[in-house]
Image (cartoon, rainbow, N blue to C red; front, side):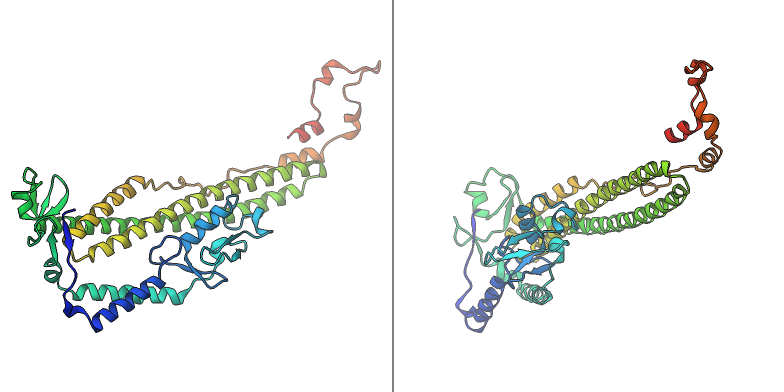
Length: 370
């Protein structure tokens, strides 16, 4: 990197420098102690009054509680999961909702919004020409950074192209590279935003599937339980087995869909963070600095696009109607069982079992096997 950002002139001191120091102090208060970045929404407040990004709090919580499966885990809800605040080491005890049970710090989130608005206004008010005048080549001190080396992928000056280490490289005007990458970054942001909207729609659809699975399972369980309750006590064990089968399939389906929701939510959160980074990068007034950061963000966008699988449940996944039982014929068979004749069936005159009649299955045995 053969350029340097020269310090501002003496005229920038005074009230402007004081405001800059104030914003710098404010920014230090808005730094998450875990990721060391500006807090990302939502911001949760711990009982010790310290703040964390919800994602950072969840990472600490998952690290301290590796056995925690999901929100509402029965194995952890009774005892309470816990972790320590990274700022003061105070022990935080969570309820069955986990990190999602922590309150959001709306005051800090409002301050974040105000801070970002002030920073955006400050960057917009600075003229790009004034900033570009301060970007000079380190090897040729009085030469401005005005070209981009395509071979080395770095901004440089004309003297470096003529006499320096870039004389054998392919170069392009810095402004054209700046506009091209800014356009690519804007297009990438638009694609990510559209993709995020699609992911949110998929999550909403899968949440509706979860509700439908629960409703259909409950309704089907009640219908079958009503029919099975009309049978005699010998069928009660089979009834409980069938009800348990439906419940297990419901749990499997809900677990699968909620796992997909969690994966899509993580993907959505990562994409939102990438969009925010891209938006902040677009606000960079220095073309060389912008190009460097844009390259990194564009690579992350490409990785995010390749990693997006958009897996979702197949059509009719929430249907539970394949659990069917016809009790009419079985009830008739139970009502018409002849216990008196059935007690002596298969016994000959000599008191030994008749092989031919013994091979026939009694109605009661058939009902029990059914």
